[in-house]
Image 1 (cartoon, one colour):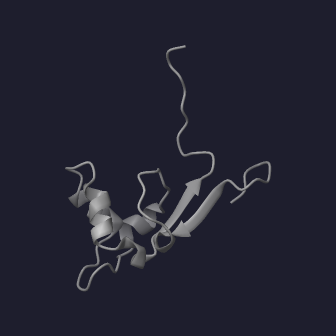
Image 2: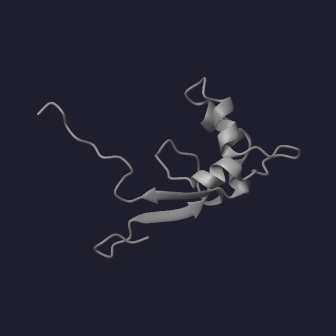
Length: 92
């Protein structure tokens, strides 16, 4: 995707091409809610199912995704080259 100046603003790929990261990523909301991931035989949770079951611990979601080998599910991801968040100094 390109921004107003024509520069590339996002890089999109799948979890098959990525290692896990704590960097902010944009994930399609509809897909996260409805797309069943084929992670292990007999297990087809959505990303939201996994996140809801792991809210109690800081790294539980990341650990669960690594344990389930999330790359095989080819979760679509996009990262912004300019960041997802805006940082503003509030003390001067």
